[in-house]
Image 1 (cartoon, rainbow, N blue to C red):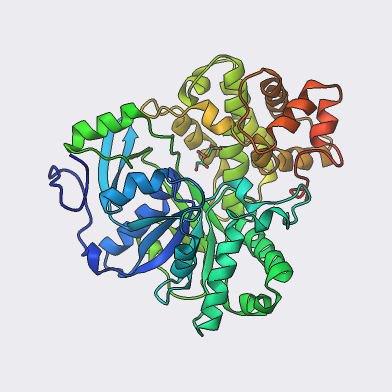
Image 2: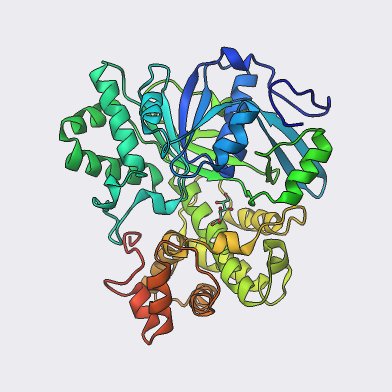
Length: 438
Ligand code: CS2
């Protein structure tokens, strides 16, 4: 039997206690993968459990119909299993109402963005979907392709303006440095080129808060779905498996109403930068290093790589001695404690987080994860032995003949194979983005 609004569930499973069918959709979320379902959708579900209303989520997949096929037959319902050594917390999430596939029905996406009940459009589309050139500017040619997020948002905003509706909060939840300002600048560039009449309205009516999002979400496997089925008594094709930890820091700059996420665990702050910088350079920086060094040493999962005595000290040094000194910590933010907590999270044996999942899209991730730290130390004449080892491991990975899942795969393989690989990857005019430079 398949999970749906009708199926009975064991009493131990926590579930929505609000009337799902009575909620308007206040959020359109673009890029509804497992991360969104384990993170922002969980906070939104909690906010509705705590009494907020009309914050249902319409999920959008830009290209693939996979999530729609998982969730639409289940009335948008799915479970989140938070796994730790202490056991599993299983809950049913009711915030997602339905999934639209932009490639199949683009107008439905535009209509959802333009609906009077919509106040927030949020994004987890991964780094590459922002379509930035190496200098950080919008790739204007790529941005008009059918799957470009900019096309949908611009068309939705144009419809809102024409209908006399207010603007929106555009909330980037991707791991980019300064994600709010980046999205605002790219959206602005798109409008200036293709919808010049909308640019001033966008400036006056829409905001793009910065966010720091954090929860480790390995891709769910058949074995995970079978475990959830055994616990639930019904089949959940949209099951998400994650860790117990979750953190969300949001810049308090909304164009209109928002769920009271701050009452259910999120932090609303004036300046996200210290949290985001620490997360990108320490957690994500260590993750990418673990991926390439770990794969090179024959490991499959994060918890195996961090247990390797030939790797753990490299990762500790990367976080504590290389990344942490570059981060101007916020009051109360203790980076040494943070590093310790990250090591514990990486070691979680209940999660099977594949190094190959983290290794994908290296060209899009490495600038904000490693290069900003390296540049800070270079200016001071310091070496970064761990980051140098990580870069060497990435180049070895590109040369290894293993499949490379990256928008620049072919170019990266060529650059890494020949002489002057470092120069061709990181030098002036090289393949890797330079816009992270201070
Ligand atoms: C990981 C992130 O796949 C990756 O590149 O580093 O997805 C990481 O698990 C999350 O950012 C944790 O919040």
